[in-house]
Length: 325
Image (cartoon, rainbow, N blue to C red; front, side):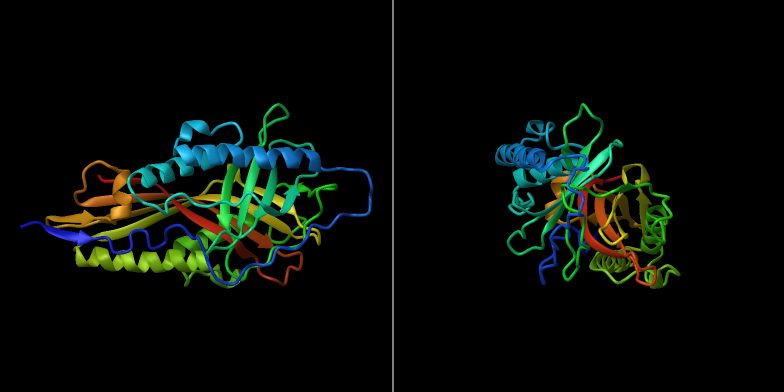
């Protein structure tokens, strides 16, 4: 007789729509010079943001990813498409609310490409504000919403230069902050791979993103043991899609996507099972192995004071694929 091994909490580290204490969002700080030096003006921002949300809302209403692509692009299209698929399968909470009202907008100060614009939204009902990132690939391209992540409860965003001046977009290996954005991302990924016992754990302030990933790993390992099987996960950076902006006090905000793959395999004739919410995404027939793939996005604050620890201030964990093989 075949046995079923349930993947308890296969999405236990699922979408991190985090409720609780509302994080602080400081007002942008304009530097003294009167001449505008930012890559995008307030007038342009006032066109980009409404156009983005008009496109997003039209696609959301129709649950049609083909309506995206002008002002919404990149990973955002992939993630929204999965949410539409889940919504059509009956998951009423699948489509995330991303408020169109901005509490603050941060823009690049230079003419290098690609360049970014970052908005911090009002708080959706029952969740924290969303940090949304727009990308402009080149001078002839439109700014597109490509990433978003909810703020971590209790997190505080640093003060940023105002839109008239803009923030310097930093090279990932810059020596203007310690550690560099590249080093911070690499060290944090090492921490995610190794767990709380990692030698990198003391180098970062605590955050709920990794706590939830580690909790899900523990649950899935236990589920694998019950099915005489094994569990593994794979976490990797996407450094080519990582950006850093200088804060008003000389620190940095780092915006980085991650790929997370979570695989469970059972033995001795057992069959894996997954949550009802995930079944609409299954590619293949469930047998003895299932792999969940996530496209995550995190925002890390590197303080200007090297004695203070880098901290994750926003993070989302988006399921984009379920493979049964």
